[in-house]
Image (cartoon, rainbow, N blue to C red; front, side, top):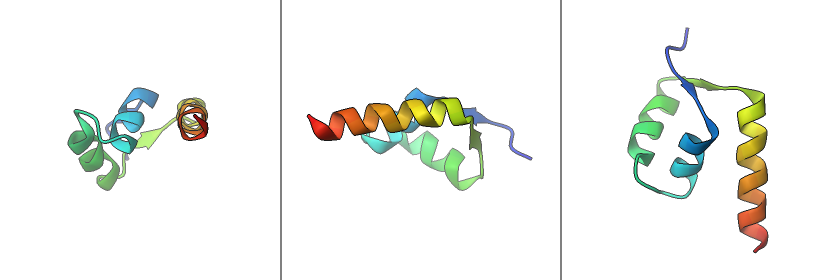
Length: 52
């Protein structure tokens, strides 16, 4: 069972190699989770960034 639930800003920091990305990487490797609502926010933000 996961002990950490990631929010959108954490995964965005990881994807864009911002401060804290290393901590998020460790959380992902440990199998921590994220809600589908936060994941959709990440995908929307990422998509907007890529299109600009």
